[in-house]
Image (cartoon, rainbow, N blue to C red; front, side, top):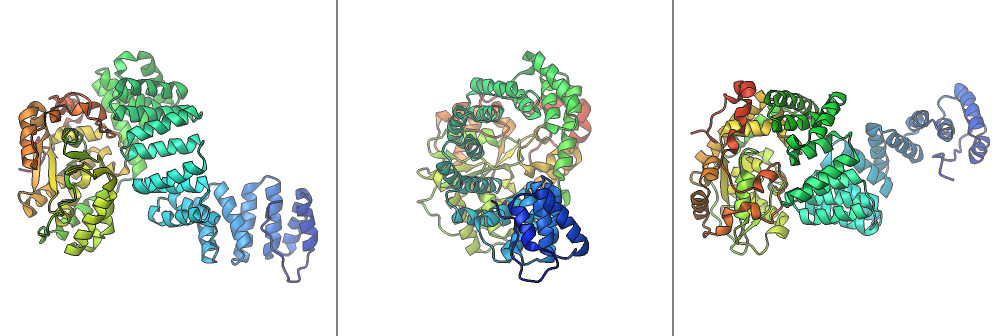
Length: 586
């Protein structure tokens, strides 16, 4: 029999505790409930009486009432770990994360350090977004029960949310070792690998999950994403169709389907999507999908209206803090107003980084794909390694010292060591690393920085019409907010150019797409790389592309992609006209 959460009492109480315990043992919950209700009228401050009443309610299936009774018992005897544990468990089962978190924290403060308490405290912290606080108790739980697959899986999920993919992979390895046939863990692990840019292994795991009978639409959706990132377009289309066919009421599967198909060829799915939008008017993904379908059909006004609604819903859900974001960009200038890059020697045994950065959707994916074809360059894709290393340097404290800069460089390269070994150069194409140009040049004087410039109207439009996975792009979903962010970005780039003259290479995306060969040759020369014919065919790269540009980069380089926004000029021209064609301030 499971513990009732009751502890023996040695106080003299005016009711028969042994009789109540016998009723509980016999599972006579109805009689136990009657007696405890009568007793509580006379003795409302008896903690164990509330606990008996909670056990009776649990036995009768009234979990919510049982939780309140155990909460009362725990308040009356706050040192009683059994009452607290039952209150915590019941709060968790009811989805009351704040109360469960408080109870589990109280248990830890009383010295209870078992695996269950650590795991559920970490899980609560994870659910409320307190990632840094969640990881230590989750790790402690797994350390106490290293064969618990569920504990390893949740720890891995925490690492993924924190962008710590190496640590996440290690935790998923433990989870899968302990539960080798779990399709759920395989799918979770595959998602992690895909986000980390390892689409080959992600696809292999997704295929294993499929063979194990995993959730068909979710597995097929992941397979579609991985196949698409590897340039296996026709297979990705088949997988996205399978996902949608298995779950036809899912806005997410409609959205993924529209990204991979020309909706002019899918009249039935367009009709079904129109019905879905009516039934799911509050789902941003349904409206994003509808906007893409209307765009394919050339119905630009309808597409813009669907997109406007999608962005309103996304902005509402994200609650982007513009003041904090722009304030952070402004503070970076003060931190580097007097800094110059230190002159410490380069370790020639270490690969040199090439940072490809700029506004999202400015062409960073194409430029990295070009460089990835070069024999001396390893492509790391979009990585959080720099952000994590900068955060560890406590940027809020102001300018970094030379010693801190060296440590930042060591941390950064250590995070990418599994991807960059054996190469002379490696690329990191996280666009918003433009924030950290000062940190880069302080920490890695050998680093080369490619700032991708593109017609800002095209950039703004491409951002506005994209549903980003990351919440870091919260500035994209409102036209005014987007314009203000772009202007702040321009000002910061101009500041970096002034502070670090001749250290930033501006790459004109539109000029490159119009005249690829001379522009690529010029770029390689500036980077100190020899000419490599393979760079002219980035679409042949085996490097996985997981960004929103994956379909474009799998085509031969072409001009004209920056003109798509003109189809929407009659509807969006008012706010787009506030931006200049230049990618940076002249």
